[in-house]
Structure formats: structure tokens, C-alpha cells
Length: 144
Image 1: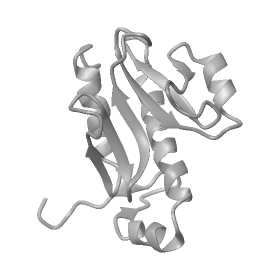
Image 2 (image 1 turned 45 degrees about the vertical axis):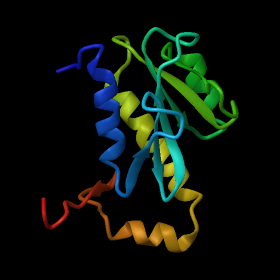
Image 3 (image 1 turned 30 degrees about the vertical axis):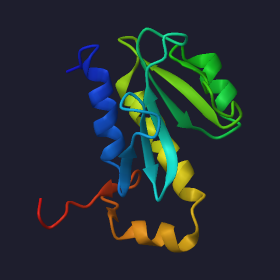
């Protein structure tokens, strides 16, 4: 079931926080959600009327993929207020394919994790299991 327009932001928050070790803070006020792994940003969820009437999320992408994503997906644009070589902005609107956006969120997280020092990357391994070839999933905590 697709979220309502107001539910896209909540869906995005949940997708970001489901990633192992992720955390959120609000350095620019309550309307700008910054999602981090070990202090490094992998997503910025916010609203800017100059960009869209909908919520947007800035995500880190591979530099060689950025132009292709922008050219091939209507909801993807250059990273607003970000380094346009490494970041994209995704409009969270009814036209957005949520499976695709979730993949972009996971790719952004993976890109940031890949740049962490080895000791921090290895600390994340205890939070992950790999059930089958493909993506890692978070291991539920003992108290959950």
C-alpha cells in the first residue's frame, strides 16, 4: 500500500532508520532530518518550496551514476545545496517508485559505509546478517 502524500516523509524516515547503526538529528531545525552512520550523513529529508511542493531527500550516489539517474528518472535531480557530483535529490511524490527510492537510500548508506574507516565498518558487521545473496538486513536487538 502506498503512503499518502503526508506519509512519504514518515516512510522515508522509517526506511533510513531501518539501516544498521543509523541515527537521525536535526542540525537545521525540526524540519530537516539528517540521517547518519557513525556521524557521516547518508540522507537529508526536508522540504524546500523552491525545489518541490513535496518532501525531498538528498542521497549520496556513485559519481558515474548521478547523470544517468538524473536523465532517466523524473523524480531525481541534482543534489540541491549539495556537491552535484556525489549527491542527488529525490522528490517524494506520488510518481516516485518506492522500491526504487528505497534502493537509492540503501545505496547511499552503502556508499557512506564504504568510506568509513575499517574499524567502524567492522563494528557494523555485528549488526548485520546476510540471509541470501544481495542486501544485508539488520539483526533485531535482544530486547525487541
